[in-house]
Length: 297
Image 1 (cartoon, rainbow, N blue to C red):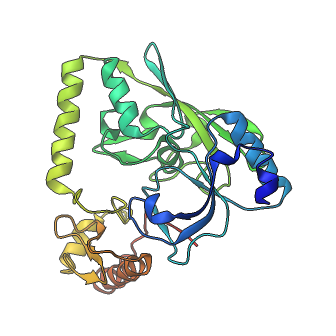
Image 2: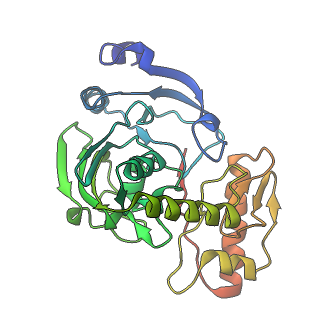
């Protein structure tokens, strides 16, 4: 398959035997057999059509900021839409960006253009595609608040554009969440604002993150979704689980909602700690914690 794939996309954009610890923010996981790096929508379409014709399943990767990868590695091809699939353009009060653009880069661009409404996303360590897929949010803001339109591709390579409303955004979910569709970009609608005020808000949110979150350790951000009527971190802390470790993985002493890679953790260390936290919280509070983190094997 590799030799045939080279007829579809330049071989310089294909890597083999890639350590997934280098492509995920948890810094764990075995090697991927193959990672493909399209730089244009046309290249992506060609790769997707090729894999569809080969009846080959694949994964889509952005920044790997919400992901745990098996210690045994990944056999499926991975299509990485990262820094080379990340253009950002501004038209009046709208920003159009490809799915590999970092949320922080989009927020910086909005600030430079005196556009307000995206400050909440400046510190979320992910790309636009992943943020749209799961309706990422922080500090009172969510992607659903600002998305005007989303472009995506299905598993056959067919391309579509839908409105923000058609994305059916809800808590950490969208209409595309449980599909094999690939988000390729979006238009974000913001408002003109005062550049100094925008900067002050971004600086305030960044300071709050540094104060409350264990940013000095590899992690995937908040490990668990917020249960209805509760806060995951508070439930975990009430079970006296702060600082509890399994291997090199630890429940953060700074914020119980974060599991961190403190000391060369493996993916299995993290998974076992997730199970320990879930079981303990369920036994004490009767609340089942769902993970925000995805798992690939």
